[in-house]
Length: 391
Length: 194
Image (tube, rainbow over all chains, first blue to last red; front, side):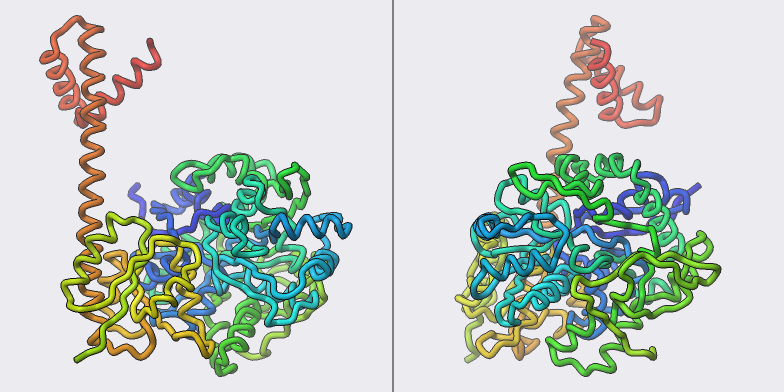
C-alpha cells in the first residue's frame, strides 16, 4: 500500500506528543498516511511555512490562528484550528531570589493554590514583575495576565515579554525575567539547572487551558477533505493512546529521541506522568492531570475559546470588536471536528459555544448521542467568560 | 539622494553573516549591523534604529521580533512583518530561502525589495553550501565504513584488499543495494559476532 504523504511542522515540546505518537505508534500509517514531520524553531516560522504551503499542517499555539484571523499577523492565507491537541502542560516558574523570599514569608509551595501563591508573590514583589512567555499570542500569556491581574498586580506592573522556550532558563538565570510560564520540558529543564522554582501548574489558574492545536490552511481542508479527516483521526487516536497512564513512559522515551526533543527521557517523563520536581532540592509535587490529550472532550475546538483569546486581543490592540470576534470564532472549526471525528467514535457535545470557566468539576453534558463528560474548566478566581451569543 | 538605510542582520553564525553582509554592501551605501547575541534583542535593535531587520526564518528569536512588530508605544518605531507589504511571490521566495524580514512601517516597497532580493540570494547560496557540506560529510563517513568492512573481510577470509572490495561490490549488485549499506551491515554484524 502506498501512503499519502502529509507534511506536518511541530515545535519540540512535550505537548507535541500526539503528532509524534501518531507517526511512531503507527496511527498515521493505519490511516494510510506517511506523516513527514519537520522540527520547527519558532512559532512565527510555523505560521509562515503553513502560510506558504511548505507544510500542510502545524502543531501550533491555540491563540496563534486567532491572532491571524483578527489581523494581527502577516497577510497569509486563512488558517483554521480543527482540533485541540493538548490541555495544560505548562507551569509557572519563579527566580530563586523570589522563591527564597516567599519561603521566608512561609509559602508552602503546594503547586496547587493559585490564589495563595499569587498573594504570596504580591507580598514579596514590589513594583513591576517581568514574566517570560514563549509568544505574545499564547495560552501562557493569557494565563499570566489573568492570574497576575487577579492577584492585585496593576496592569502596568505586569511586563510580559517573549523568550524562546530553550532560552527561558538562561533568561531567568541572568535576571532578564523574574518569572516565566512555559510548556514542559522547559520548566523541568530550568529546575534541573537550579535556576528556577516551580510555583504552579497552568491548570491551577485555569483548570483546562487549551494549549496546542492542529492548524491547517482553510483551502487545504476544502480541497483535501479526505486527507484532512485521516490526519485528524490518526492524531485523535494517538491522543487516546497517550491518555492511557501506562503508555506515558513509552511516550517519554519516544519523545526524547535525538530527532525529536533530544533531552533525557527523565525530563519529558515528569510532565507526562504529572510528577514534577519543583526545586533543585528535589521536592516533588503530583498533578496527575497536569497534561491531557484526549479525555473528557479535550480535543473539541469550542468557538467560545477562540472568543476568549480574541477578547484580550481586541482590547489590547483596539480592534473593531464585532468583525474580529466573528473572524476568531470562524477559524475554530467545530464543523470539521464533527464531520471528521464522528466516524472515529468521538463523543461530541451538541453545542459549538459554551460559557467558559463554568465547570467547577467534571460534568456530563448533552452530546450528539447521549452524553459527554466535560473536564472541569474553572478559573482560580471564578471568572466566567460569556462569548457573543450568535455566530 | 535617498536616505541611508539601517539594516540589521540577526544571526548567531558569523560564517553565514559575513557573505550576507557582503551581498548587502553591494547594494550601495547603507549602514549594516550584525547582531550575534540573542539576549536583549529588542534593545540591541532599537540602538541601531533599524529600518530593516533580517533574520533566519527558523531562528527562535524571531518570536521576540514578532512582539516588536506589535509594539505601538509612543517611543517605539512601529515595525511591520515584511509579508504585509509585499507581493506574494517575493514573500514565498523569502520563506523558501529561509529568511524573514521586519521592516519599519512606512518604508517604501521599492526600497525594501532590493535588500530582500540580495538577502534571498545569499541565504539560498548558504543553503546550497550547507547541503553540499552535509553530502561531503556523509560521503566521508561512508568511505570510512567501507574501509572498515574491507578490513573485516580481508581478515575473515584471508583475501587481498582488491578482492574484498570486489566482493562488497558484487554483493551490493546482487542484492540491489548500495555498497555503503552492505558495508554498514558487515560492520554491524562483526560488532555483534566479535
